[in-house]
Image: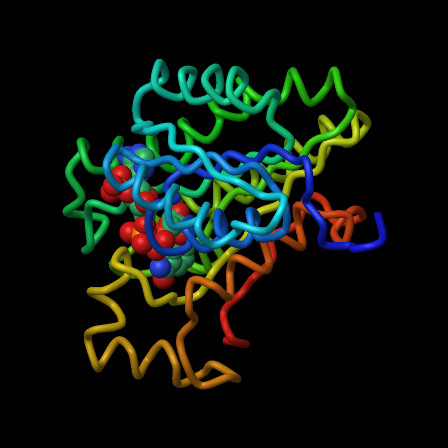
Length: 255
Ligand code: NAP
């Protein structure tokens, strides 16, 4: 293999890959030759994004298949893994990307239900999925785990604090896996995007005041596009990133 970024023959599962950052990661991985599982809660969107990607990679080695999954349910995560095995084989690249943020505001006001939902969806479901996928990687002595964290997990925040706690934990999850399973040639890293133009962050980048604040200290003076995270994920998954593990790569335009 001469291309450092080639993913030909690799099986990649990307949670939350029908929109935004996850979709860009799935597209880029397929364009680099991977067999990609497109997944989110909505079956029709999984099907249409899968068709889009297969159209895009028509002449390449990569391909996509749709397996819907709500990351909040352990049995759906297990189905995602089992169904991937039967369609494509064991998983080489796991991208834990889907996350939720049901609450903006003071930590004094966050309801227990919202706090628990954030911790369950953004930490526990990633932990579960890693538990389901790592044993096969250990047998093959090969595997890559990528967790979409956030710059929100690198600093304190007055109204996104609970989300930030969950994203800081995602960085630690990657570090723990890197240390425990490095000897089995499994690499684990987190990506911490800054503000990216997706639906998830629409309330932030559509607000002129927040947008100005978010870009004021950015070296590039702008917010990011989902595709700009896709390339970073390919780098981490491919041979190009073969000596990178346990890290959180901040991708925020130099903020
Ligand atoms: P997005 O454009 O809203 O896409 C989110 C994706 O996740 C969709 O495919 C959505 O599809 C799926 N999803 C949502 N809840 C799900 C669930 N419970 N189970 C399974 N799939 C679910 O969001 P995004 O901005 O790309 O966010 C992706 C990741 O980047 C998240 O981890 C987020 O925390 C992180 N991030 C985003 C930014 C930013 O500025 N955008 C910055 C830092 C970090 P369905 O709704 O159809 O299920």
